[in-house]
Length: 335
Image (cartoon, rainbow, N blue to C red; front, top):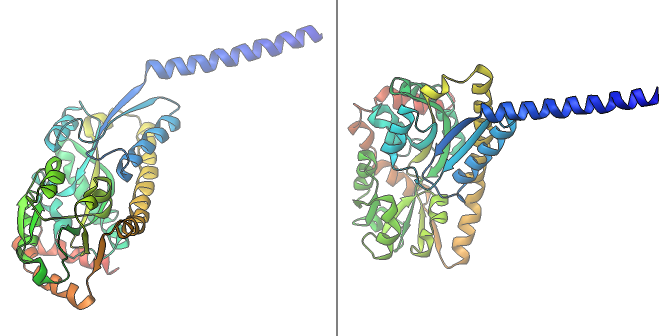
């Protein structure tokens, strides 16, 4: 009797091992690979966030999903990422919302100056009806938006102190190719100079430009404080990234698989936003420790900057209509 029981236990254990092995083999045979591309360095909160997404989704799916990450623009520039998503050669990627204005001009909605006053306000806009509607508008282009993650608020990193509008006059500052960004800088009296992202550090080092307006995290992880002593906290506008997934790919997934992707993204989104926001105090403290200066505009001076850029949004009324601007303002005000 004892021998029979013992054999029963051994057989049950063998069945479990075979079952687990079969499940693992089945997952391996049916494994779904997600190629994911983003432009940031691995140590930036965005890079860390995507590593968390990879870990969470692979665990959540029991190994069914495998995520391969192409950081630091290794997959290519914005055009390469978008084409990869459309063709399902790339399954996921992210980029600045203003780059997506080639598909929907209203994706420049957050390039309008001084509309978003805080991170809490940015969440209301991007996670609410406005952000959802604009992300969904990309569906006809073969792209599905999962949601928004953070770059942050633009601040000025410069080789000379910028304390007033008068100090900003004539400042040769790196600009993106965004027309709205260029107009903001011009309205503040600066001299915007487009410089490719990969050439920014050298341009600042060689004094091709004297400044860049960029968020604290990107500046820190790309070592710009090494060559720009002054940081003026302007918060001129807020920059997010839209996390995108290939529509062709997403539609091949089961409902459960789609839900796993969404849940893992939600975990990553919260971590990434928290890290961006919590890092800022640390970054400013480190800049001060290494001899840099953090300049805060007085309320009256900041209002002068807001007034100076007041004509920018109306210039882009065709792309970002006044009713969208008004909807954003009401959203921020909680109306």
